Image 1 (cartoon, rainbow, N blue to C red):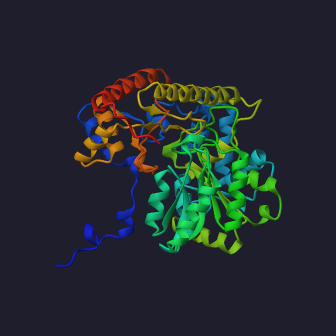
Image 2 (cartoon, helix red, strand yellow):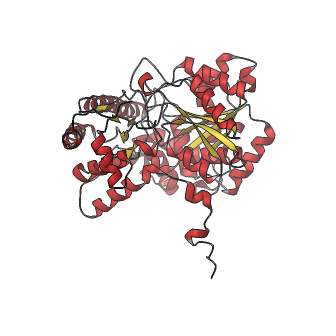
Image 3 (cartoon, rainbow, N blue to C red):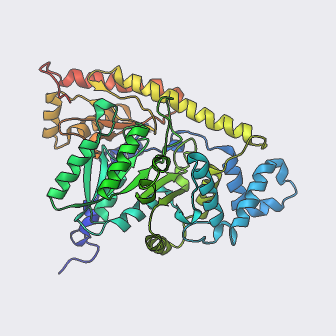
Amino acid sequence: MSPRALDYESLNENVKRAQYAVRGELYLRASELQKEGKKIIFTNVGNPHALGQKPLTFPRQVVALCQAPFLLDDPNVGLLFPADAIAKAKHYLSLTTGGLGAYSDSRGLPGVRKEVAEFIERRDGYPSDPELIYLTDGASKGVMQILNTVIRGEGDGVLVPVPQYPLYSAAISLFGGSLVPYFLEETENWGLDVNNLRQSVAEARFKGITVRAMVIINPGNPTGQCLSEANLREILKYCNQENLVLLGDEVYQQNIYQDERPFISAKKVLMDMGPPISKELQLVSFHTVSKGYWGECGQRGGYFEMTNIPPKTVDEIYKVASISLSPNVPAQIFMGLMVNPPKPGDISYDQFVRESKGIIESLRRRARIMTDGFNSCRNVVCNFTEGAMYSFPQIRLPPRAIEAAKRAGKVPDVFYCLKLLEATGISTVPGSGFGQKEGVFHLRTTILPAEEEMPEIMNSYKKFNDEFMEQYEDHRGYSRM
């Protein structure tokens, strides 16, 4: 009897090829241990609220009123909600046709897209067109829409930074394209060398791959670096020379933990360069409510902005968006609130600033505690987390540990991370899930556990790591970069 359509052997091969390490083997084992009653610290995914971050008060008040508009008619509403939250809720409800239970335009509510355009203008100092901004269910959905539009088949390649966020490798596999890796330089604080890009593109072309797009993640995931303005200019020039569309994943732009290298958007650098490049280079930029000091991952709110994309293409992307009918409407309101928060003089302004500053300052301290903690451990080196939400330490595994991993049928850093999980309950993601240079091993952890728990977590990690190294070291040297 021939296999049925949903029997494993007859599935779409692209689905089987796609891997997503952030919720892979380690996560599944951690979930099993949790069911058995073990305390698990899930540092495998950038999910701030799951690790105890409190939601910001003002946006939740506004969305609560939008979700339950009958509260606005209650004579006591002013006792429970501040006047500016009530006014904002009325503003957002006026932008919808039928409230939060009705579909919006497939691109998102026009009023919210206008607020996003105004935010981009304030940030970059250049005009932004709401018609070229699409609201999406988280940045991931936007990335997938654009990749689906760009990739025509396995002959089409997309340049992706390695180590990379597995959304890209998984989505490129799913749409039948080819991932073209370009390696970030760990010894240069995960900087990007354009010569490395040229080499990657040359190798891909030699294999018959047409490279059509390039992804940058700034600030970096999993690597936590911030790209300099000079680096961004080089990237933009390179993409223009090679006729590549640049996909700017800028979801961590609020997560900056040092003052030397502030976030600067790819669009601003492009516009600063002036014509002809500012009128020619195709750029799509992504942002979300899931990161920053908002951390509203479960709301699934995001947007992308298109620069220099031809009108006919914009229409085709609208058609693809229309297949999903509408991005979720409460998330669109979260996005509106993120790009248009309380202003000085508003009743809720002081509380909003106090809450958001408190989160970012705590993350800044946690980034330092974690980096210093890793660097105090035997055979572990870690660049400082300049931005985003992750540490990506290199683990210099002794040869005997690599041999033990082989015997267990595991990739060496998976072997290490599983041992770490069993011993401490700390659930991380092995570096092999993000891609790394041959013979070099890492793990990724978020910097999101509660600040007061961080010293204990790092002590527990250090104790495990030093015992692991003691067990497997035979003092004949370690694997080095």
